[in-house]
Amino acid sequence: MTDALTRGARFVAVLLLTLALAAMYAAAAQAEPQIKVNCNIYDTNRVDPIAYSAHLHHQFGNTSTTNQSTADSLFSNTRTSCDANWFTSAGWFPEERNEPTKGVNVYYRAPGDQRAIRPIPKGLELLSYKQMYNCNEGPFQNKPVYDCRGNFGTRLVFPDCWNQKSLQETSTVPSNNRGQCPATHPYRIPRILYLVMHDNADGRVANPLQVSAGVDSWASYDSMHGDYFAANQPELNNELLDLCLRNAPDSGALPARCGQE
Image 1: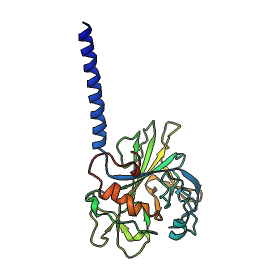
Image 2 (image 1 turned 30 degrees about the horizontal axis):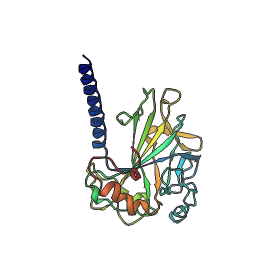
Image 3 (image 1 turned 120 degrees about the vertical axis):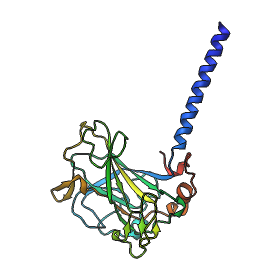
Image 4 (image 1 turned 60 degrees about the horizontal axis):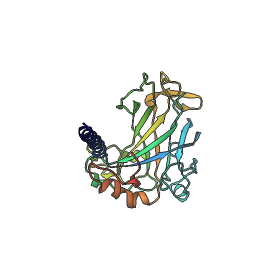
């Protein structure tokens, strides 16, 4: 009886270990080549050095950002509200009314042929072109998740094809789903996404969800957008694009420098 119990205990232990390893490998296999940065909001103000819009913005990244900021002034300032010291770009987005923000994840991805991405030019201005929403890390949808009773997120997607003629945001367009750029905008940068995270402390999403659109003015949720003023330190272009995107396996665990999942 004792031997049988011992064998049974060993079998259960081996089974549990096998299942744990399988879960670990499955999670690794699902990893997507990417760079991830987590940022805190350091201020809410009316600063917008790209469009000079007067609505309320949540600011993150480079803490020296003003309406007079340039690519060189941002690059020279190394103070950031993000967990990666190289992230000295300036990021901001309109306030979502009555929905406090607890942080922002910034992702750099490369759908399709990840080897084709090129460095992000210093001073490139980007305006997100698409917003989506999710609840409790569930699937994203085009409309706010009004029935969400947990944490909810707002995802903002930026264009990743540049015409090489101007650094202004009007010089960029999105690639297709396979990351292919049109002939008019052949220079492909990583696809940048913001995930704006809300703790939804009151257990409901404001309905209708509105965003700041001016001084004491609010607009529909579909006016939500994000801004990105590129001024990162050389580590991103010179090292991480290779390590985390161009040379990364299509599946498998990513190096810690790429950011934690």
